[in-house]
Image 1 (cartoon, rainbow, N blue to C red):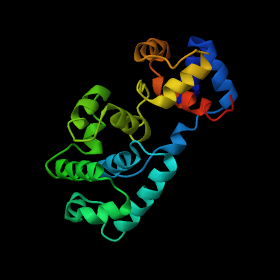
Image 2: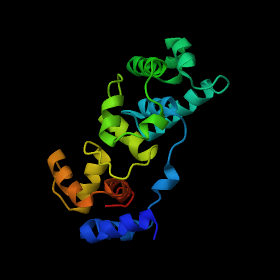
Image 3: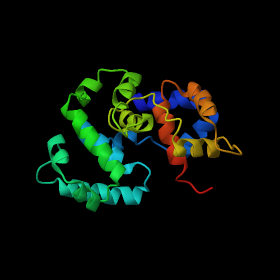
Image 4: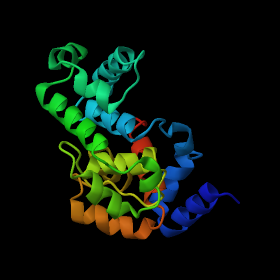
Length: 205
């Protein structure tokens, strides 16, 4: 039995409603959507995707990658890029400030992914949220989709809250306190539960 099979079996035994969702969705495909790149690449992508629709963010991110295709995405390249060029790609002035602050922090010694791998989840969150524009949710996405941590529950994520509302037939979106209470049942596999809650939104009401 592999790690995913153990996680899914544990979740189904712990929570019958989540178990019904798991049966409906099928195999967990989280390992198939793990993201590539170093810390700068990963967090720059997260900055692009903040507060935008997937379609808009994907278009901007594609232009971003094309812009740096020849020289690569490095702190030096980003810091040398005029703001007007980043505006033309689709960055807001605020996100340009975030991107350049991130590049400066990488230059001045932000830990690499290899170093972050050795830290606990909360240590990683505390380390990276010191960077302008990098909040707890952004780091949690890095933990899930880049560092493949197993017990992450993004309590502020609208998709997670919407999924819980549907799966547990709630009248309103759950509060942060309610999400945390449910999450205790899913430990130590909150990441897997989160992935299934996101998938629940793929089904019609």
